[in-house]
Image 1: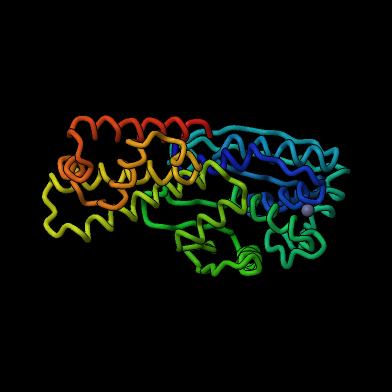
Image 2: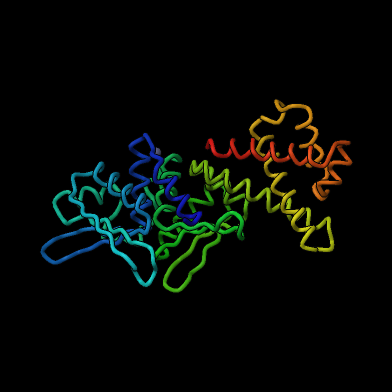
Length: 310
Ligand SMILES: [Zn+2]
């Protein structure tokens, strides 16, 4: 599964306790992922489409909570040659639909090009909830090992413009661009993406992102230190990068201080000598090569156990 899908699954599992935020989240979901339907003699309806089952369920639950509307959910395969399933949540035209739209600030004129947020987004808690909904419906983020990129795609300019100003209001420096028939609001910096995920309370995603960024950063550092990139050196560098990320994780969790002296010394020596081979580390520590190897494995195991608990 992609990292973006992981993030959406995590966000879909979370829920806000305040009614105002639940309403703002569903507004974000619908403005980015839904289109309004108007059939002669039937009145207004709504169609929300997503490739993520958890997000479809989330939309359904929040919708049903807001108004006694009739809903249908359908699954179709191979939409537009893509191999992902596509889930469609439909709000069937009926007497409660108008009230639902009013609660969400949606009118035929503003949908899908909903303008400013108005009352719905007056509170800061609701602005975050709206962004969380918008990301679940139209968002995507590169896996942490790849280039830093997070985006939310909108079908028209107004919702994209609203996202752009909401993100700016939260202290980000987002970009906005058009791509084919769509508008894309994006973040390009690792720090910003990590901050966004953390603002969305996607804790597992933040942790994965931070660990991978540490590995990336240390690998770059190591690569700068060693000029000739033979396969062997890269292997050492990769191992060192992993070890350093593990040690940093233990450090961040406050566990490092509680480890035995040999483990702490080994961790410190590794941090101070990112480019050292195992044999060089052994010399620095005045210990045997296999002993040092054992300690590094132990640190990796502890970091792994710690990572799995979350
Ligand atoms: Zn709120």
